[in-house]
Amino acid sequence: MCGIFGGVLKKGAIAPLIHDGLKRLEYRGYDSVGFATIDAGTLQVKKDAGRIDDVVRRLKMNNMPGSMGIGHTRWATHGAPEMVNAHPHTDCNGNLAVIHNGVIENFMELKEELLNKSHILKSRTDTEIIAHLIEEELKGDISLQEAVLKSIRRLEGSYAIAVISTLDPGKILVARNESPLVLGVSKDGTFCASDVPAMLPYTNQVVYLRNGEFAILDQDGYEIRLVSDSTVVERSLEEITWSQEMAEKHGYPHFTIKEINEQPTSLRGALRLQPQYLGLLTALLDRGREVFLLAAGTSYHSCIAASYMFSRLARITAFPAISSEFIEQYGSSVGVDSVVLCVSQSGETYDTLKAIDYARMKASTVLGITNSVGSTLTRVSRAYIIQQSGPEIGVAATKTFTSQLMVLAQLALRLALMKGKISQDEGDDFRENLLRIPDVVEETLNRNKTHVMDLVDKYGGEQLFVFLGRGISSSTALEARLKLLELTYVPSLAYPAGESKHGPISIIEEGVPVIFLCPRGESRKGIVGGIMEMKARGARIISVCEEGDHEIIGLSDDVIEMPKGIKDIFSPIPYVVPLQLFSYYLAVQKDLDPDMPRNLAKSVTVP
Ligand code: AGP
Image (cartoon, rainbow, N blue to C red; front, side, top):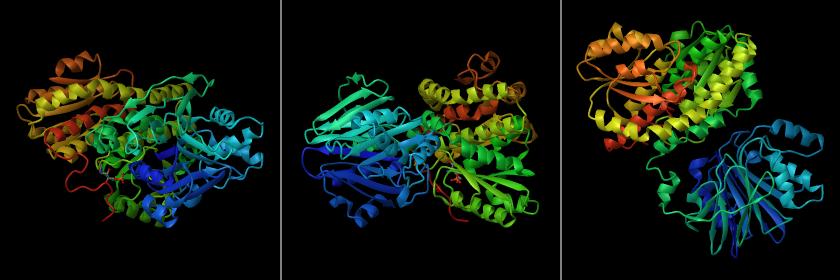
């Protein structure tokens, strides 16, 4: 997730506005920054790794001449956060500059094609190929607009793109597919940005570009066209009435709820991983005599879920290990034949890094899944995957949890296919089910907001909650409970349902709310017995179950009904979502700050 800002002014320099606009988008990413402007027919580009203010001051970017230009603040997805990988990227001749937010899935094949045509690519990014594709198209003696369109039609993946060129120095050409882009118009000029807050100081008259659309901006306004056939699209401006602060949170009162609601998008991003990295991790995982899944907090809950996925799909025993316990628990046995797959949103968690040091010292193969390119985890891993969730500001992990699961599910599926543990048809069936999940999460969010708020009204005064699930749903229960602890501070317990009768049931009294995770599937039979045990002791049952599951619905005091058809091995991804909402709205009801829970830090970098 990166930030884009550009503008064509009627008069005056654009560079200070780009600086200001990018500052307002800094929440989208902040590892490197760059501007490109055109003045007197000459393209100027300045960029470097670092925070926006530091780089802009050091390179004197606010003094760049020109009344039109584009700027970018980067959250690395391909290539480390270094100057060479910072946007804008240029063609071989330095005549055009491109900035991009998103992931180009077919960039490896396009890159190879361009290298064969003697293009010189300097960076490790997917973005740079766009500049060279346009350059290549321009050799066909067509207009800049045609060349940009033809190039965009070849891109697969997600993108918001802005292009400027000395060939048409009064215009910015933009396009969008699945990454946000908004245009704004004022009496002083025309703007484009990833998000409304960037342009609010200049205009509140905006128009949102939609998927598959392309626009040409000049100082007097914009024209929108379809990428597919250049048909002109008529769309009028909207007036934005949000304050600056509301706009940064997309109109939501907190980052946490914004991030919960972003999950359909972040999950789509996690389904768009580069196949070669997935393939590399799969091959390395397969080489291990034993696999450890190492993490802390929420990421550990992902690892518990993954241990079920690896076992069920790929028939691999993978041991989930808490980072701070790893050395004592497995230190003597871990060795050269061990593969340690480390999961860390930040890639900087002290306990995880310490355990990695130990595993490396014992010559184990260390692999990583993280949301932070350039983090320590990416440097110490033999191979790693970036989960593509975009920055998460809320201290409580929400969208990064579900994306971790999405990455782990894809690894488990690939391993299963590679080892021949499932047939190609079964693999296709699982894959189709995974592909449905972003839509299922979207539907879950849309249909449950009011219902969950009603549940918060009903149960908000309770002093104790219990979360239970069987099989892979025990990981959902653990994560749902952690969200409740972090966001509301209400004491609670989470257990595998079958284990609850071995002790935890002693705390059940009349009226205690017990939340059961009951997706359909292998674990579904056993859950009914668990519900009966709790009901017999007076518990009030809240079930998260598939819609139309009349047996569970009949046994429950309240239900959250989930869309049908998701396999239980993938169920933690959608099933945790309504319970994230529950904890969030309960925190709001209690007048707590969900974005910054007490005593917690986003990344725990101390022992
Ligand atoms: C989750 O809501 C917490 N903020 C915390 O448990 C977190 O998951 C843990 O500290 C691990 O962080 P990491 O994924 O960045 O390593």
